[in-house]
Length: 508
Image (tube, rainbow, N blue to C red; front, side, top):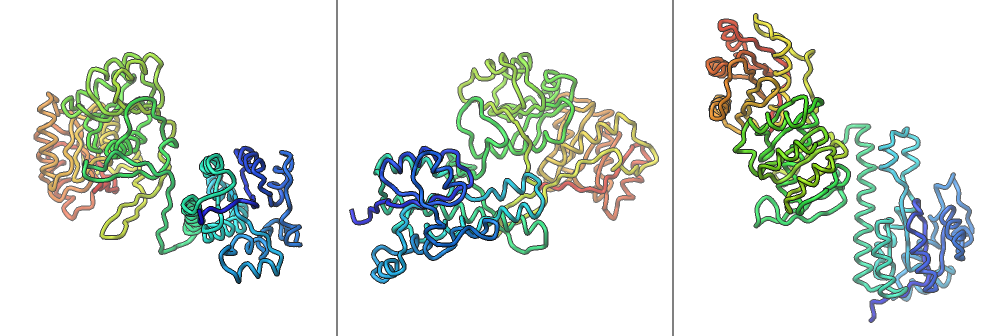
C-alpha cells in the first residue's frame, strides 16, 4: 500500500516515563533506532537500548537551563521533510538530516503545577516549548510521521505496532495527528486561562478532555455527549450507563448537598429538590425528606452526605429511584441497593471544583461565576420589629439554601429543618407561593410556625400576606424592591418576623 510508512527512527522526549518501557521494547524488537535528550535518553539506556543524543545530531548542547534542546533544523527538518518531495529529499541529504518517522512526546505538567499551588515562576517553567513544537511538526507532517503527543496514546500506539509491526497507514497517522492537536490545543488553553486569571482578558477558551457518548440527549431523538472526567467526582459502584438527564440531576444534587454540613438527605426531580431534611441520623433524614413529597420521589435522584447504613438502605429500597449518591456505604447496605440491576449507585469522593458556569446561547456563550455565596447569621439584617428566634434562624438559612438551588421564580416553605414544599419555575412569585402552599397541604403539613424563603425580592406585599394567612411567621428574602417598605409594614402589622440578606439567588 502506497500510504504505508516504515518507522525507522523515533525521537522520544517525555516528562512522565511510566508506561514507556513497553513501547520501547516493542520498537526495539522491530529494529527502530532511538533519538532522545536528557532524562529520557538516560531512561532508555538504563533499559539496555542504544540511544543517540540529540546534542550529537545538532552539535549543540542543551542550553538556557534546558529551555532549548530540540529546537534545531536537524531535528525539525527530520520531522517535517516530505518524503515524496524531491526538493526536500535533496536538502536533507545536503545538510545530513536524518528522517524521523515517529515522535513521542509527553509535555511538562502545566495544569498540574497550577493546581499544586506552585508560585508563578515555577508555573512559567512548566510551559513546554520544545515538546509542543515537536507535536505541531509531527502532526502537520502526518502524511509521513506518527506523532504520539501524550502517554494517553501509548495504548493505541502499542496496538498499532502489535498489528502492523514498525509501520503505519495514512489513516492511523491521521488519527494520531488529530489526537495531537487535541493535546496541543488543550495545553495552550490551560496556559491562556492561567494568564487570563491574572489579568482582564476578553476571550473565552475552553478545552475539556474525556469524551463520553450518552445513549441520547435530553430526548431520544437528540444526540448527547459528556466531556470531562466523572471519576474525579465519583465512582459508579453499580447500575446501568448514566444518561444525559441523569448527569444533569447528579450535578444539581451534588451542588445542592455541598451547602449542608449536618447529616442531610435530599431527593431531586428535574434538578429541583422535592424532599430534603437534616436530622441526627441518615434514616431519620431520609424519612423526613421522603415525607416532603412521596409522590415526586418516584424515579428521583437521592443524595446523602453521610455513610448510608443498612437500615437506611432498606428504607430507600422500598421505592423506585434512578440514582443514589453518598460518600460511602456499609457493605450490607450495598448488597441491598445493588439488588436492582439498573439502579445507579454512586460513591462520591470529592466536591465539584468548578467556579464558573457556561451556557451556549445565541450562537455564542454566557459565562458567569458560580453562585457560591452561602448566607450565615451575620448576613441577616433584621427588617421587622419582631425579631427572629434562634430556631427560626436555623430554618430560614436551611430554606434559603434550598431556594438558591431551585428554578426561579422560587419559594420554599420549611420547618424544623425539613422541606415542606416549594413552588418552582413559575412566571409569578405569587403563583410559586400558592403552588408551595397547596403542595404542603396535599401532604398534610401544618404551615403554622413554618418559614418562607424567596430567591428574589417581593415586588408587592401580597406574598407575605398569603404566606401569613397560611401560617408562616418568619420570612427570608434578599430585599431590593422599591416597595420593600410595604412588605415590612405588613409584617409589622401582623407580627411576622423578616430578615433581609441583600443577596439574590436567581436560577434561570
